[in-house]
Structures are given as structure tokens and as C-alpha cells.
Figure 1 (cartoon, helix red, strand yellow):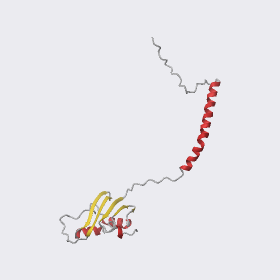
Figure 2 (cartoon, one colour):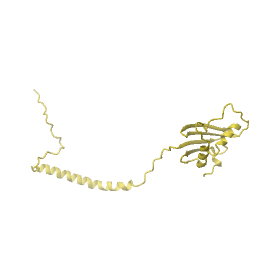
Figure 3 (cartoon, rainbow, N blue to C red):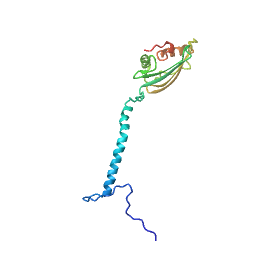
Figure 4 (cartoon, rainbow, N blue to C red):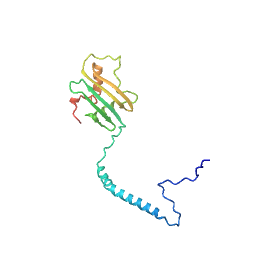
Length: 181
């Protein structure tokens, strides 16, 4: 017959022996506590210079996270303007971004925004437009305006498209003609 395992677990080799209340601890227990106390003290002394140096190393300011912009946000890309192409970020409510005339562009867009109307709607396909060519300049605007997604293309290929471009003159400012506000 094989021996039956004991129902009482044996103490782990690293466990502290149990001392009965009122009884004096054994000398081996006291030596073990003293040894552990010395080791803890030595480890504390060894780590002290490292721990004291940490606050100095982490005292440099951490970069702030870029806040998510909850207002209106548009990206404007101007191409074929006869000069350098440009790409701007426009934030409104509050105004900001890399657009050179952010405040004026936001004001212009606010004036054109009407409930139920898309200010970025393309020219109606059935519109009668003059055959006036305004130049090769093109623009692409995408993002969010008045809580709705925007994906609009602009050009100056006829009178209607020129009028639509001019309606957004502050938003679609050419890079070379755009001094910063």
C-alpha cells in the first residue's frame, strides 16, 4: 500500500515559522529575522542613489497630448495655383489650425451655413454657366463642418465654378497670396 498524502500542507521553505503567542521565539527564528533585516537594509542603501536620481531625471516636463478638436475641422489643399501648392488645416469653434486666415475663413463659412443646406454643394449639373475660364487652380476640402462630413472639389473652369470659388475666397486662399493674420 502506498502512503496517503497528509491533509495538512507542509510549510513552504521560505515561510516564517509560526510563533505561539506568549512563547519566546527560537534563536534560529531571530537569526533569520536579523539576516532578512540586514539584507533589506543593504538593498535599500544600494538602491538609494538610483532612487534619488530618478526625480531629477523625470523632472523635465512631459509633452502635452494633442487634444482632439471637437469643433469644425477642414483640410484644404490648393493645387495648380501658379505657385507653390498649399495644404492647410482649419479649425473653427474655436478658430485655429495652420490656415493663414483662420478667423476670417471661419467667419465666412459661418455666414454661409444654413440649416438643411450644404454650403459645400457642387454646382447644379443643369446650371447655365458662362464659358469663362478662371485658370487651372483647383482645391480639395475635406473634414467636418456643422457636424456633417465634407468632401468637396473646387475649380475655376466656368462662371458658375468661379462664383462658387469666390464664395469661399477666405477658405481657398492661395499659398503665395496668404499673409498670416
